[in-house]
Length: 443
Image 1 (spheres, rainbow, N blue to C red):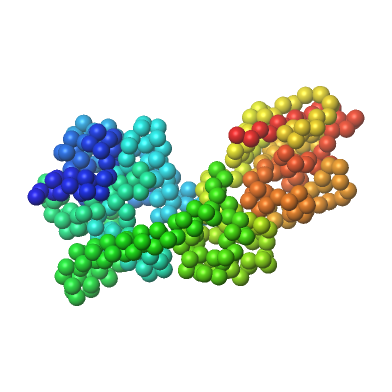
Image 2 (cartoon, one colour):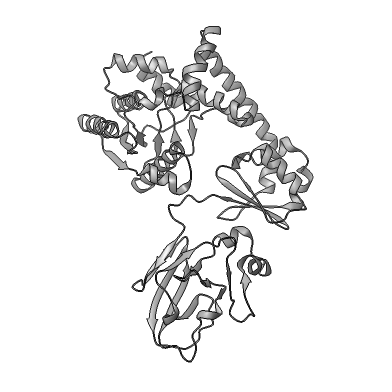
């Protein structure tokens, strides 16, 4: 059976796609993705290509892009290319370059899929990637879930080359004379995955020449064991976790009976990637430390008085918005601010509207999240008050207060906790000549 027939057989066996589906191929220019593009084109599937230029390797990045563009042009395949300022994104979000590149590419792939109505996104990971992932997860202690490795299909993403070994890909690339480019960073052992591939797996193959096939069988056993476990865990999870649209809520009294069972706790929260160490800390804090935040790589979990709140972390390039003297509209997170200047001194009691003495303002004004140590002079209250104390008195949770817009004057004074309270020092009076009116709308 030739490789094209094997590909079609694997797609059918794993139910990766339907024959008429529109597939977005993610093509880097490396041998794996170039072989995938070649095979999908030969199979006559309805495809387009997406290529990311992360601008990390100078001229090499440009040559990668040129190769993929040429392949698409030669084969009459639509292509979409996007260049990213990966280093700046990594710095702003305080994450590694590798994590930044991953977030940027998958976010863009999904945007393309939605906007252009592709049915699937195809990624060219192969059997050796599958094995490396399991060994990497084993070293990180991800548990039984991580020992499943790379799933052939997850949401809209498919991995149609998981049946091929790296050596087979090397053979077919040569057999079909497919042009490709090597990323030299793949040969550096400073990255954990490369170290596993270059230094560790060859020793296993010395012990067992059929290492890939045997390990693939082991992964199948791990996957079957995990699925069996989920038949027990899933009904409990469904009973506990309630979706709120922007996160999940668990009532503490409902979780109480499972609290001391750490293995079960780990499985219940496995979808949010909380480690056993973090969940052990949760056990210790239970009933004693209301308001504490627990972190995984992608989620926050708030231990509140009566409930647990779980929210996905937001990765945004900036947590601030600026209002100048010329600004009419500005957005911050889910809020939209409309600004206007007048001489109208009428007081408005709406929580969405704040009026300030214009002559006391120092532009630009800043909208941001609260910071530890923030304080202001609340309108209608005596003296100075810390924002943290104000939040406690209003029974505002940590998750909620992170999303409250804080308007700050150019001199650093807080002007307004939007929709809650403005600062007494900047209110309009009978002596006010000019008024800045801000209207805060959600969504």
